[in-house]
Length: 263
Length: 267
Image 1 (cartoon, each protein chain N blue to C red):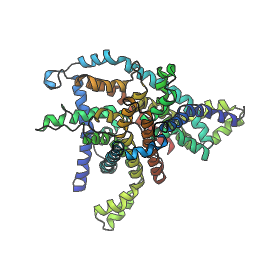
Image 2 (tube, helix red, strand yellow; image 1 turned 30 degrees about the vertical axis):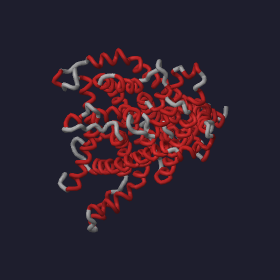
Image 3 (cartoon, rainbow over the protein chains, first blue to last red; image 1 turned 180 degrees about the vertical axis):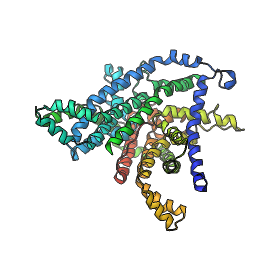
Image 4 (cartoon, rainbow over the protein chains, first blue to last red; image 1 turned 90 degrees about the vertical axis):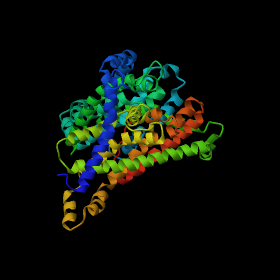
């Protein structure tokens, strides 16, 4: 099968790219479980570093989970009805609005965080509360929820379903909850998993918005890279992988499933 | 309540949130850039100050290099994975796409494990091979998170190319390299433009990776960060952020006019 020089070249590039992405990941996993990384695996394997990370950073990990769930609730409340309204009224205005809420995908998180700090930095109670970070996360993840729900809504015959329900006397809010939401579920699920995954990993905005008392998981990671020994930094990265990889796989599965409905 | 009113109500939470936390802050940021000692002349000042000017140039150059490298690697790999079915293909695909949601700081740490003082390369090769904290380390870090992004876009486009076109070219006697140049690459061009724009924009704004790696080298996000936190030069930080935002946003907009939808994430 891989006889032609072109195929061999392609395979080599593929394997090299895989090695480039995988080798440091494996190194990190191994380093997090090794007694002494400089002496290598022969020094023995241990859970000591993981336990140490847990005592140092468990607050950060729980804060991140809490933020991700709060962010999910906000994007559901704001994003799902908005996606419905945008899908119902396609046109220039809707496209411009969608374009505008998608700005956080194009503008670097650092610039967005600076903008938030400029406007709300002086409002102390808001600045030092966890909701300040939450606003940043919602801003960044909202377009993913809106787009995901919109693309599924665009694929189903919303108009006929709605007309049917309306002719049977259903009021608009019942149409939304009984017809629109159940039909949009695959898009909502894909969007929800994307929101949670991105929120848990968000660093660019969070680093600028966080306070010393509100460190999220990635902020803790940056902190451990800068100030802890390699084994602890690696063990912390390992915990992050254990949290994020199942989410990422679920997200890929849900997105593929939503796309199958659309095509 | 009529259906029309209900649909309008559905937009209300979005409009309130976006106005309060996106439109107003961005407006404030733009105003803040003109409130320093140079007024609106600050944008001219950036182009006249070698430190800012060369940082801007350096950031653009690294981002271009990353874009080209990521396109070359991901197109080769993407075509290979779309066209061939073999045992282990799924595993390779997962390895190549998993780093999609790694935060920039984690990517920076991966590069330190490869090219840092205690890194793999330094342990294996004789001599002192420490490149994690240089422009090359930054390039590798950006490449690390660009490969999955570009790969997914290119593969989605490659799956839509009709294999009959290639077969026709081959039966007509075209050599492989001509098929690639005349059939496959033109069909992939829109996806490559979109993916390249995402890779470039992500590299321009990548803060986490730069934060971990850029100790010896200035890139735009790091300069914005130091202007803001260390020098408290808010007008300059705001002006540089505006420039960074406008460059990336305009580029993605142009790319989209060539190629349909684009989605960028993280970095």
